Image 1 (tube, rainbow, N blue to C red):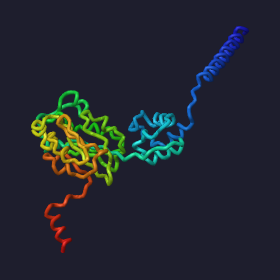
Image 2: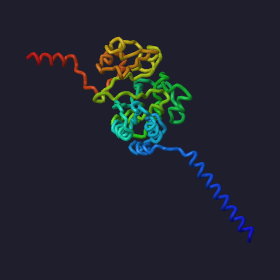
Image 3: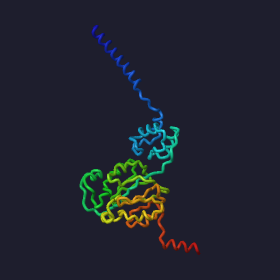
Amino acid sequence: MDVVIITIVSLAGLGAIAAFILFLASKKFQVFEDPRIDDVEEVLPATNCGGCGFPGCRAFAEALVKADDISSLNCPVGGDETMQKVASILGKEVSKAAPMLAVVRCNGSCSNRPQVNRYQGAESCAVAASLYSGETGCSYGCYGLADCVRACKFDAMYMDKKMGLPVVIEDNCVACGACVDACPKNIIEMRKKGPKGRRIFVSCVNRDKGGVARKSCTVACIGCKKCQKECPFDAITVENNLAYIDYEKCKLCRKCVIVCPTNAIHEINFPPRKKPGAQKADAESVKV
């Protein structure tokens, strides 16, 4: 009986000592967490999309609280409204960010880019890209296997079966960048949405020389530099046989669109251009 009592007392004593040691350790190694992190996380959209550049909304909230200047940090899903709430909580200033949008820089539809072979494998762009250059003569274009569509958490993309290309639904896109990361060909880019949703971009990423590019896709950029020479704002550069329009410099004058011989430059959400005859008629009506 004495042995049992001694054993119980000994175990209880050891337990108390262990508990005391754990208590001291918890106090010594206690990590203080700023309560504002919870407040900031609460106003974030909780989508954990990674569009902010951090692995989830909690990590983004921690970065916001620790940062002295949050003007360079942005939640693409929550937008300016969310960032203003964050700024109010932290007592910091945040600049208004221009709305961004995913843009598919490939116009190699089934009619523009003839098929030269047939892929029979896993329905994944990433898998196909690791195996070969694609079903057409253009090794830079879209595979059409919808990795970007599956990556989108906001139903902002779908595959156009007739064209064989992904299409962005502007009203749903939150510029999280998931589709950009999912594309192994880097044909999807985040660009400014533009005033009234208007934007101009080169819908091609082919870096082959003009004749080769045109042979594989009838609407490929051939690097002729006509657009670069026409642009009055130095917004266009041509490198590696491919033109690129800087959306920060572009003033949406559309002069480059007119001179492009392959229609590789796209203008989105602009009013229809008036035909030369219609412009002349309008001028005459004004004189009358």
